[in-house]
Image (cartoon, rainbow, N blue to C red):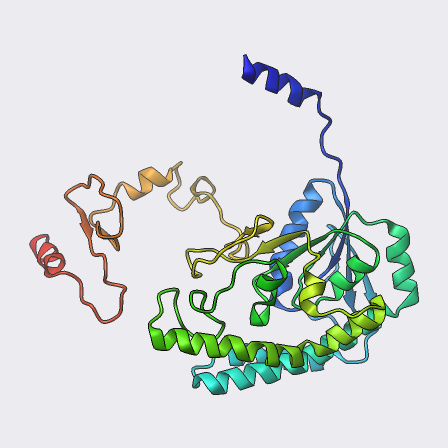
Length: 342
């Protein structure tokens, strides 16, 4: 009876109306994931406007959104050179302090460039007039460069953040999530969520240094926001006005952390389009995932009942939990089992 009444109530509701979305993206690989989201929003009838600098690298025109550009005081080549340097540091295997200072220097340079781009947008009277008159329903932006949030706060528009993270855990602090240095590993520390006492001390010292380093990196944005909004504003205060945080994280790859209700994990969204097996015609006949995998001879599962719940297993399923825990070798029974089937 209750289900029938609820269904009748839902039928009386009108479908959600499509909205008008202002997108102020972050350049580089950040844009590639965001573009996938915009494609889906466009399919659902939302009107989308993307605003980007004229020196954009990857942000291109598309039928799914309107692209508007504005002039900036630097060239595309300068942006590309800086991005290549930043990527190289991210994959460097140099000592921690070397990686830390190199990355800090890259962030300082990129912050100055993005601040110049943001300033060009905020003081572009024609573009700001267009934003004001368009009556956008929401701003979709990456807070690593908080220009979108400055505009959202200036015009009192709700903000949806799309990010993986912000240096110095500014995103965590802005969302008022717990961030205890004794339990939550700091960026570049290489610590896990299970730390020894020396690792916790190292983690604590890094957290202390963050307030100093990030104040230098983001000070130009804080000055710009304070000047434009005509009131003192720190980056944490600026981002604290965000409505929803869409984070490209997943506990499968990242350490567990406390979350606020408006923080949503969408890890995997940047892993490309996946096709179902029904679309793959290599075998020249319909095939399901279950049927395909049923032809496997041996299943070596990186699991162990020490950490996993007990379950029934078939004779060809061998548990080798611990093989991915450093220098530990698989159980002797595994090699014995393989020898028997040769």
